[in-house]
Image 1 (tube, helix red, strand yellow):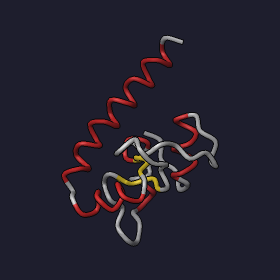
Image 2 (spheres, helix red, strand yellow):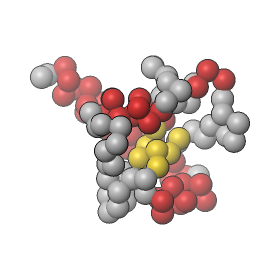
Image 3 (spheres, helix red, strand yellow):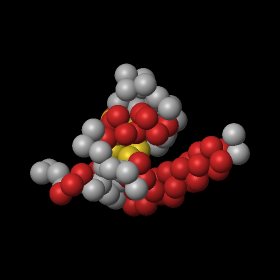
Length: 97
């Protein structure tokens, strides 16, 4: 899977957003997503070769959901499933366009 140092650009390119677009939060669908959350945390110092800056690890969230994700790690597991479904549907649609 493609990785990138600029994970916000990677996210925007994959999902068809402009880098300055602000998508809706995929956690609550009630607010604008102000952060791109790494479902598998990259830690304070980052990780070698940007290996966690992959589309299957990037999830747009509002501030409230981002805080929740860092307090309740189980929410990340739920969001991983949701993200995999979104990726699958996007790839399926691309095959049939």
